[in-house]
Image (cartoon, rainbow, N blue to C red):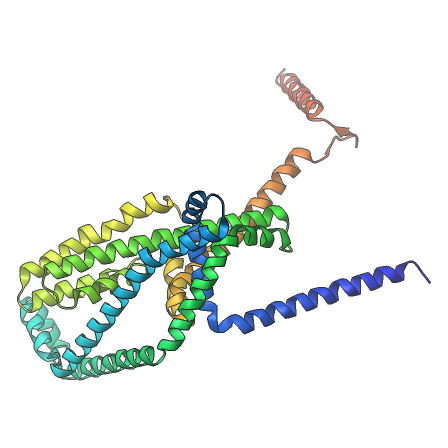
Length: 399
């Protein structure tokens, strides 16, 4: 028997094991996919609340189970219960708004006529000459859109109510997983980094960048969105806009979308107030939105996550919208996370290539014209010698 046969068998066993590993990994993702949302949010929460777990670990004198339980109780009371209460209030307000719209539909034509009457005379003539003064078709289409929107919101509310059991099951699974991720998250992360089929340095860099991206998306965008939504809701309530709490929550969610974000709410609200005759209230909403609400992002984000998160705004916009279309509400976070990991992976590759080029420049073999290896000192001496010889040659030519 030749000596090469054991090596062939070893290679076959190696690739067979990798195939089995890939298969069971895909099967695990397939089996857990119905609960991918709760698992993702539990993982992100465990990353964000690690400082709380470390504090609890000190308070419980190093006992991991009581520390994880204490952290989970604090998260539930301080974060989840207020969020559930706010969600129920927002749903009730949305249902009340839908019922009001169905009972008293908005006269879109009257609103458009009022806006048309407020326009300067040259603009009115331009609109009339180009056929923009006939609002019947516009009114019909807007009424259809409002009716369709009300129907969609109502159907979603019904589906949420009918799927209450699934919601509470997902909620309970998320809390259960969060307990173990708080307790064992650090060791699980170290195991993943150690076991990843990557160079250890690259795996550690990816893990570090991933934690930074999670911090930027959750701590930065999330906190900024909450603050902007809170300020926006207060501004709308002061201006007397109905359903200000619902609109404030919408602003908190839309704040995750750069460039437009909260302006999708406060700009139409301000214009609507001006159209119905409440000019000062509308000017107040527009001014507060442009000066205060829009400035929150520029003030808080550098404090929370630094001045450069590494993800351009246009990429965040595209990936957020794409994530929402693919994964629903979870896509608000999932999209920017994928974009951040994409940019982080390419930046690590760029850093490694730069390091390789620097090493090549520093340690590569220097060979002279005679074919013999030269040190840096010898090359510098030869360069000085060649410069002096060239200067002598020029003097000879001038002479």
